[in-house]
Amino acid sequence: MTTPAIVRIPAFSVAGIAVRTRNSEEMNPAIARLGGLWNRFFSQSWEHKLPSRGDDGRVFGVYSGYESNEHGAFDVTAGVAVAEADRAQAAAVPGAARVDIEAGDYLVFTGAGEMPQMVIDTWVRIWQYFAENPQVQRRFGTDFEAYEGPDQVAIHIGVKP
Image (cartoon, rainbow, N blue to C red; front, side, top):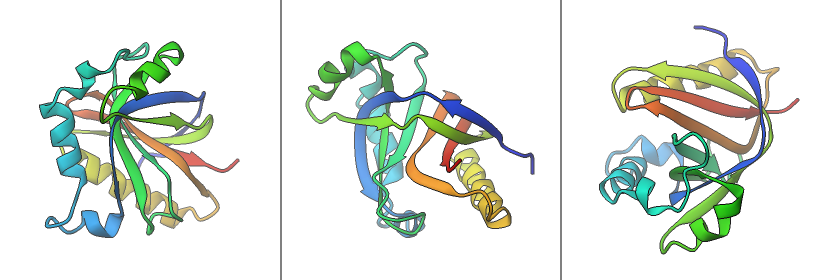
């Protein structure tokens, strides 16, 4: 397993649509919500409904509102970065949610391949990394997936200094 890179990320906002879930629910296809979230995001063209796509046009999956840790409930927002000037306008779109990414240090894990397996495999590597490196502690503030295209992801995990 390659060592993830540590990157300092400035604060930014993502707008899109959101669900609340937990990892244990995502393991059960009968109650999993994330597949439906992404299907709705793309089938309803949310990436085009929002007033701004920030400066890079990437699609994001943002994990926030952690109840506790990876075992508790959390929110996932599928969306696009919005420029600071367009934040209020993006939040005013009916059904839209906005989440602010915390500034700070993030470990970046990359994955490539076919969806959704590449994302699943990358998360497995993330869980293994933290199990093998207990000295590195997650913040459980905001984490995010940045999609560079249909077959590449960079998952950013907020860590304590």
